[in-house]
Image 1 (cartoon, rainbow, N blue to C red):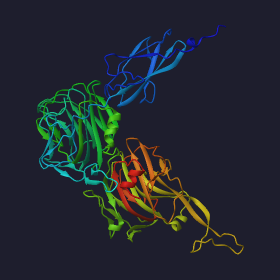
Image 2 (tube, one colour; image 1 turned 180 degrees about the horizontal axis):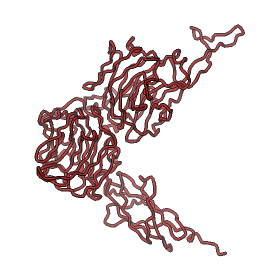
Image 3 (cartoon, helix red, strand yellow; image 1 turned 120 degrees about the vertical axis):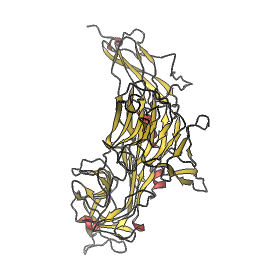
Image 4 (cartoon, rainbow, N blue to C red; image 1 turned 30 degrees about the horizontal axis):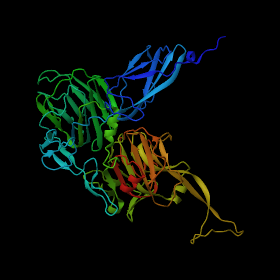
Length: 598
């Protein structure tokens, strides 16, 4: 039998040719010229190597998790879409009658996008919110505050660094500002249009909805009679939505709307990031909540709206309506359809230091409380912790008896589907936990759902060990034969994640056994953009920050010292101090140490 040649077994690496009209060009050994932008398709021709007769090709970008389906043909054209800027690698494989062959690859660089055409952070003064997308006054679309709209010191960034720290002086920081709206007349508006609504565009903002009792619009842009798009909240479904009007019809004429709604109901009084995208190439609209795609639906009847951009209200049938009650911050508009990667990046809200911004939304400090409740000391945020029997304030700590003592406040206190950071000082009473069964889980604090926790910090007793007994001087206690005397001691570990009745919830577990009868600083971080959780003891990470986690939105009380697993239980014996929660995921040990402390 004649032996097959290597070419007959598989084709050689195929050729990859860049379209000479761009937008991308190949990297050479000494040069890489950026081209295009994120979300802009490339144009490449795939062909056979010399002597090969190929029947199909498949490809993938370095940002893709899997290969494309095979595209039949001896020579084919492809148009992959890079989702981000920077260096990109295109890999291509060919196959022939004998099967797939070796891959070829090329590198090219994607330019940064054009950036937003409008950005308003409200961290300024006066009657106008300055458009910070450009420093050219001729190109700025400043937004005038009207109808009682005012700035508030509770902006989503928390604090802004005015002067960086030096070797001899600390950083100078000031509170961030947002746009506070009363839900009846308050709004901000530009003098003219910011985007051409016939072309691709993206609108995004951080919002804190004060009440969910009526429809509320975050952004729209005036046509003659109505806005083509509405990004906001719909009371009928209690969900976020991104809607597009099919025409600029006057009052009395029927108008059809296409919409995408959020997967979960909106959570009032907490920070949430919203983004709406219209893609004129695909003729689709998409909604993102906290960086996560909620859905995409066709929209084919785009039209031009030549009027001002409205923040906090919308034009409908010739009148203004759906005034937003609450706070809006970090508003941005792009004349392009951002990719999912870009929306995630925007929702990270990175500061000048490249780390995520965090706003303190809850602070319960027993050292500053008396009686049977702990006020929320985070300015302008609600939610006093009410204490039950078995819970008491002693020497600046919340002391819990392990059977009924706890604190609670109506929740959710943060948007569980968005990034957040939570911390507390905790101590577990070793003598009381000794009497609990192995596997007992004592919740330190957490947000409940109907059947368990959305997230929580807890201690789990894992067993009992024998340890040498020490006298009051720290010396070993010996028996009559000179052997060390031992005593039973409970052991366990700390957790951050989802506490469930059947133990199936994901969590990060402390590397070492918990030190009982000693106070420890516990910090849990959920990064919604990366879909991971991390647990810190003091400022020491316990898993490396790569534990996958899928958010589940809370539906009931936020509790301290007890957990809900179908019924209340999991009481903590011990004490808790300095409970704080931030909107935003602290990124590393250094940021945890700087903001949380140890």
